Length: 425
Image (cartoon, rainbow, N blue to C red; front, side, top):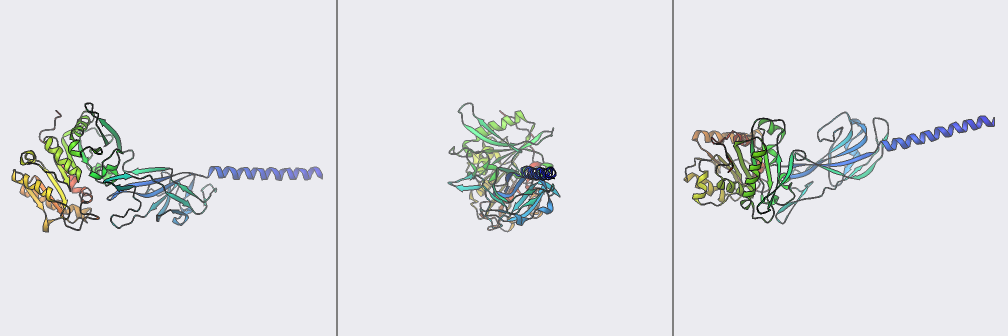
C-alpha cells in the first residue's frame, strides 16, 4: 500500500514538474522581440506614422485591437498583424503587430515630427517611443504574451532606407567635402536621365539625410509610381554648413556629377536641375556657370541676381519657375523679365491665372496642363507660375509641396532633351 501511494505521489510530482517546465518554455517562446518606429517624409517633413512590434510567435488578426495598446502622446488609428512589419500590409495572422498613428491635420503641427528647426537648420531628433501592450495576447499556438511597456529599439525611414545610398565626395585639391544621397534604379540597362535636386537652406549640415526628410521634394521623383513612369537617377547633395551656400559649392557638385556620368549609364542629354529656396538660387547659379549642363530647370521659390550678360546663356533654355504670390517673388520675376528681354519666350500664370496651391492630384495636373498648352501655342521655352496668395500653407514660402507633387510638372521635365548631349570638360 505504501509502495503504491509512493508511486502515485511520484507520478503527480513528475506531472507537476512537466507542466511547470512547459509553462516556462512557453513564456520563453512567446516574447516581444523588438519595437520599430516607422517614419515617413510627408509634405511638411518627416513624422512617425506607425510603430511595429515584433513577437516570437504568430498572432491572429482577431486577437488584437487598438484598445490593447497605447503610444505615449499619440492616437492609435489602426492595429493589424503581418509577417513583415510593413505599414499597410494587413494579414490574417503574423508575428508583427503594426500600430498606425494619427497625424494632426492642422498645417505646421509638430505632432510626430522627427525634425527640430533651430538656428536656421533642421536637426534630426532621436526617436523614443513609449509603447504599452495593455492586455495579454494569446498567440496562434495558445501561448500568452503578457502585457508590458516598451521603448522602440529600431527605426525605419520609409522612402529612404535601402533606396538612397549615402556618399561623401572629397575634393582632392582643397580637401573640402560634399555629402550626398544617390538613388539609382535597379535592373535598367538603358541610359537614364539624372535629376539634380538642391535642398533649401534649412537642410544644410553634415548628417547627409535632412535633405530627404524635411520635405518630399526629392522623394517625389523616386516613388514606385514615379519610377515606373520615368526611371531616373536622383542626386540629392547636402550643402556643408558655413560654406557660403550652394553658389560656393558648385565646383564640388559638378565634380560629383562628372563622377556619376563616368560610373553610371547617364543620358547626358537629359540632366535636369531643380531645387527649392536656397537650392533654387543654387540651381540658377549652377546653370549660369555651366550653361550646357542642364536640359531643363525647375527653380522653386528662390531667385538669384545676375547681370544680363550672365543670365543670357539661359535665354533659350527650357525653364519652369514657381513661387507663391505672398512669398518674395521679386527675384524670380526679375530673372524671368531679364530672360524675356534677352530673347526667351515666356508664358506667365499670375494674378487671375495664378495656381491654387491647395490642389493636388488630377486637379493640380489640370492647372499644369492648361499652362503647358498655352506655352506650346506660344512656342514658349519659359513658364513662370505663381500660386494664389493664401493657398500655400503653413507659409507662403513652402510652394515646393505643391510643385513637386504635381505629376504633370515632372512629365514636362522628362520630355526635355538637349540636341547636343553634355560633355564633361
